[in-house]
Length: 335
Image (tube, rainbow, N blue to C red; front, side, top):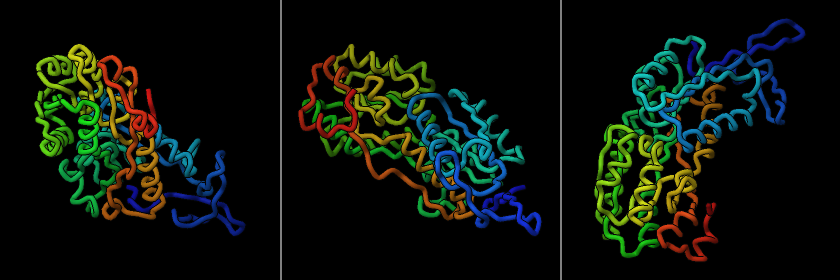
């Protein structure tokens, strides 16, 4: 069984065959000009995400791009890509397969439910998570500064205070905010708590509607009599976002999302993180682990330090909201 800190490399020297550790050996230049270990055996990485939606898909795109930039491309890396499509039994089966694969070097678990399943089943190789809002609350790490086991990664903790302040700027008369969330997702529960704290400071009240499946999103949204919607990084809700957006348009109220991809799909606006960049940052951590330059137990959880302003002009016009010129100038993207 492979350890956390060793990789298998081989190089031919004039004197004969030498076994090199991950810290040693010459480097070659990959097709993209990046430095890669010479004669590196193929690294196998298992990837699993809980469901398909643009933000989680972007993590995978960014991760693979970051790995390629570090020289892990072509024959240097083999990916075992999996998607549970929202089914917990499938999620458990995927990580169980990873746990029993003696050739697996590292696992990337995308979103909280996937990370939790991986952490429970996989103990002999590094598990990197991404798009996890609160790793400590999800019991994935002992602390963000010192994870303490074989699990670490990147958090997509979103700036709830700034997002709800943006709502007040766009809809000053708003008094109540509706949140549809999955009660089975730990990251969603904690975001509702954060939203309540932020709302109180802004003179807003939060109305909740809990769901157990994405098929319930639109019905839950219809049940709320509110002045606006806030959509946290809830995988079940985001995967069925169009139903909530339709309800918001009918009610003629704004939707503040937690991520830019949801704004592109029709939410009104957000201060959100770039999930492709988050994937690239996760890849940088993976490279350190694979080269033996770090251990999961002592590698701190990382977050993106910058957020971007995303605006959807069409969505705003449909409900009678007009973005200020200053806001349009500050926006990273206007859809």
